[in-house]
View 1 (cartoon, rainbow, N blue to C red):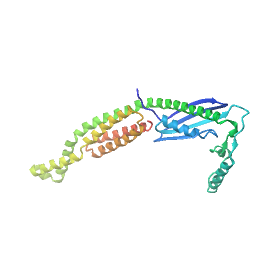
View 2 (view 1 turned 180 degrees about the vertical axis):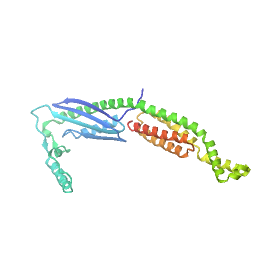
View 3 (view 1 turned 180 degrees about the horizontal axis):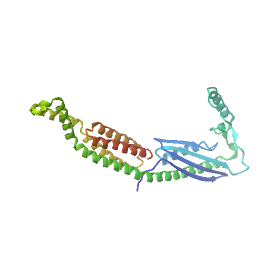
View 4 (view 1 turned 90 degrees about the horizontal axis):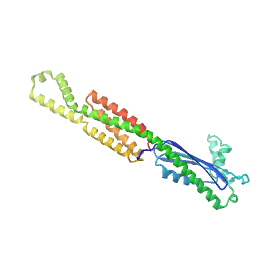
Length: 299
């Protein structure tokens, strides 16, 4: 059974290859689009491209953060070296920012910047390094697989909540349809009372011209207060929301649909001529807002 996914989750994977061991952790939170943040070990800059490609394969939106921590298992391996040219460029820029009031950089912060630390090429032959990078990329995929499972579990918890709010919207629409049927009579009675207050003698005599005028004016007001179109569109939106839930990923489309829901609910309230219909409209807006909050968690 197809179900929706959430956007919050965690995944982890570990690996080892060619004297290296590493761990990968991937986290994600809500986001309107897919945003990937990567932090990897020095000397493995190509892993960022692999991580972004894998994230795009797994997810459609959300803020995804992935970190790779690696170390050489061979105690005799040569230490990493500092790229003096790149470090000097970072220091020049940091000093300029410090003169403008920025916090001076720390040593560990500078060393963590891309390109500052690099592994000597003679430590490993190209084939061995390529094998390690390939294995690390596979671990990133595995961490994203675990993250996807975590997001799917969140989605399985979101689905009944979203469905329940959609059901509530549908019940309120049915109540609004009943209330809308009483609008014409309410408008006519209200208009007649006002005419009686303004011209009581004419109303009491039952002048045909005045009675016709009352009818025409009431009909015009009833036309302007007709909410059938809004109710029809709300009903169509309910059907669309249910269909989208069966065709994930649908979070972005559901976000847009929530705006349409609220637009129709606002118009319903503005056209309402009875207290009962206004109450239903306000309750409808409250439920739609609750539904919107849940939809923001859907991938």
